[in-house]
Length: 365
Image (cartoon, rainbow, N blue to C red):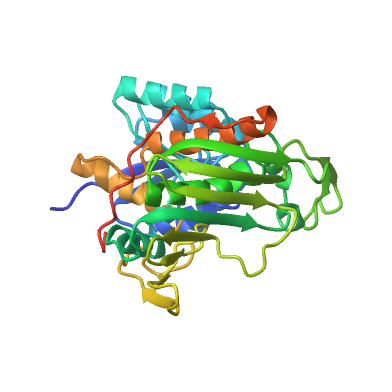
């Protein structure tokens, strides 16, 4: 049965919007009907590039009756404000990570959605990609026995070296933990389940940065958030993970995510990508084996941002739960903010929220 496509309004036409628009425009389950940005010329350029029929002001888009889902690709500090405004006007929301920059705003967002019987979805959607889903299938099948622990690392050089306007990445709600940490924490929760408590240590290593490329190259700006964070994460299942995120150094040779089991190890694909393989070693003395992806949802490979929204659109039309639930994003947000709290207070922080592991993806959507 042919279903009417879900009508999407995109807010925030920055760097990442290109990948979203490319993938959404190729999917008949969605229809991008309008885009908006505080910079109208930037919105017009994106609309022309991807044949989006209308360019609106941000508030006009949120209020437009033809828009069913607002896709929020704005800066982290504006996520909650815009998501709440969209929900109050009867729109579903799919937002870039994090859900909000505080658990209070995250909770307000979910409460408003529940009150209005609306949906909240949240990136990262890379956990729905073919490589991550293959790792999930191996783990759930018991291919490495009982999951005992995990390691998750993103040790990268500063985005100020290449991003043309990186200041927002160094403000409240960003930094490596809140910007790239969601990929790692969401992956861990999707594989190992909800978190029980955390202990963390964070600090600002570089107090100021210089823009390296683009029209603002040479501009110096202050750093307001930790550029190094490390944590121990205890899961309700009994497993424990080590986590480290930084923009101060590169982690040569380190995998991004490993799951350590009683009878083997799984190497999970880079959680900032969608991947096509996973690796497994089934015995302590065995050799790692590359496993071809069991799923085929990232159509052409590469950057498939928008996969989570595409899945949510189908769930709306099929009247079933979508996979990247707001409660998952809220739980991840609480874990990350609790790592910062633990660093400040010098103690384990119990996690108050919980969530369900997202249902596995079908092998073809």
